[in-house]
Image (cartoon, rainbow, N blue to C red; front, side, top):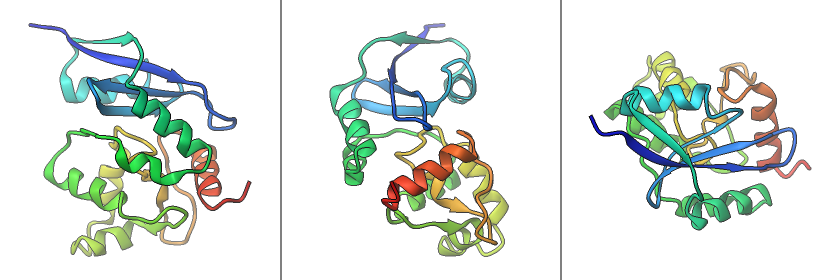
Length: 172
């Protein structure tokens, strides 16, 4: 079996968002997560590509890094130009595409997103697809909230979710 190699780049971001890890395959972003590359990020990649992968600490393509820095500085449309490949099932890709349609600074509930997909009773399925999103921020899973308006689960932690939403609303 051939080892699949990916570029891994650490981006030092503003606090409290903390470090961001970008994983690319050539010019295409395949994963973006917080914390450590050995945690959730590695599990998501192994679930998709198998256990025989190598994350090489090399420079990610400049356009990805530049777009992330621009986003962190308030140029939210910069992420739209990043080529992505999130993998996933047909339903997951449908959810992830719909997430990218939620305007910056706005939120939807899991049920509202399910309804927008024509799947009125699929709020939990939307939540599961959301939790398996391998490309945080670029596929803005932080824009989904509970039906009561409460911030609910986020792979990067609720404080990061709160920060991202406030950042996009220009609260800072």
